[in-house]
Structure formats: C-alpha cells, structure tokens
Length: 155
Image 1 (tube, rainbow, N blue to C red):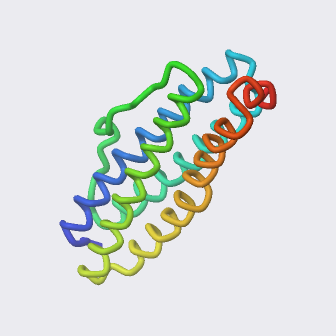
Image 2: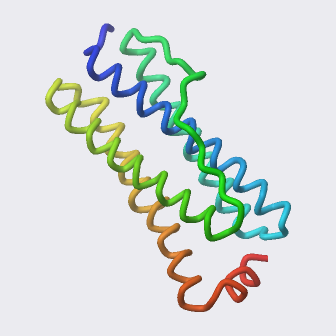
C-alpha cells in the first residue's frame, strides 16, 4: 500500500528519534551496570527494549506504507557523565519524543491515516506515562533524599 508521503516523512523522523533513544538507553544502562547500580541498569535496559519495540513498529509501518526505512539516520545522543546528567538527558530526550509524537498524531489525523495515528498514540502513552514519568520521579527522589542515599538504593 502506498501511504501519504507526509506521513512517511514524519515516521522517518520519529524512527530517527526512537533509534537515538534506544542507543542512549543502551549506553546509559551499561554505564549503570559498570558502576554497580543494578536497579538503574535493569530499568534502563527495560527502556532500551521498549524503544527498540517502538522502532520496530515504525519500521513495519513504513514498510507497509511502501517506504524503505533508513536505520543509518538517527538523532544525536546526549550521553551523560554521571547519574544526574544521565537522568536529565534521558528526560529531555523523552520530552522531545513526546512533542514529536504529538505532531505525528496531528499529521496522521489530517492525512486520515488512523492506523498510524493509533500506533503513535500507544507510543505516546508509553512515553508519557512510563518513561518520562519514571525519570521525573527519579530526579524528584534525588532532590528529596539526596544523591548518596539515592545511589545506595540503586545498588
């Protein structure tokens, strides 16, 4: 099926974001693991898997719409150097993804591509309700209990 070129272009932009999110979570999870922060490692590795699933859904939709996904094109990474910068960078990434997904949903509505819209709505829910919310909670915990107590709880 040949899809709307505007929707295809938007999906390609969203794919670039999901691939970057996957890779950023990948490196951050491995850094946490190396530092002995096993709880953070497990959570970020879980997020990496979810971002991979989001990318997979977009790839499948692009193929269905008659497009060839470009996995070489991805947004840049913001790798942190400590726990706080890593959490803040991941949260900034999720906020960016939220905005991009909302724009994609609006475009799909305008182009009457309701299947793609519903796929993006599911990803938006996951991004807002799971990823971003969890990151906000972690930064809030650090503010409440201090970094050292937070880090000890993540071992």
